[in-house]
Amino acid sequence: MEPHASAGAEAFIRALVCDVNERLDFADILAHPFFGGLDISKIRELPPPYIPRIKSGEDTSHFGDVEVTNAMNRSSMASLRSGKMACVKSL
Image (cartoon, rainbow, N blue to C red; front, side):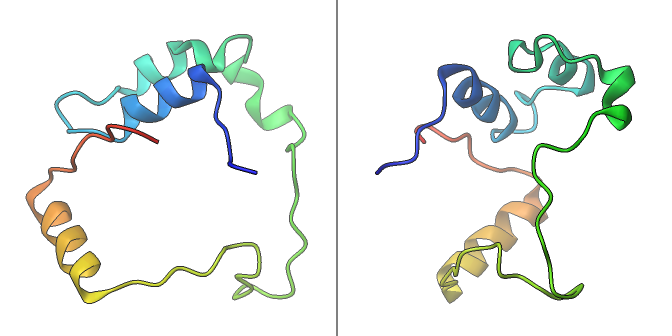
């Protein structure tokens, strides 16, 4: 089954994963409808929705395997150095 994100989640992700000049700032993040109903002042009092069981500080079993190619490394590093990340056009 294909993973699915709600329209609100997709809009929020798009507003974060884009050019720095178009990206949401902290106030906009907190005001985004994705966080509707969340009282940020009480965030530390809320129980986490999921607590993974880990074997050690180096346990990465909750992360999928990713094959990283040299081209991906070069492209990502160039984007990071320039401070520009391309906006995500589709998820």
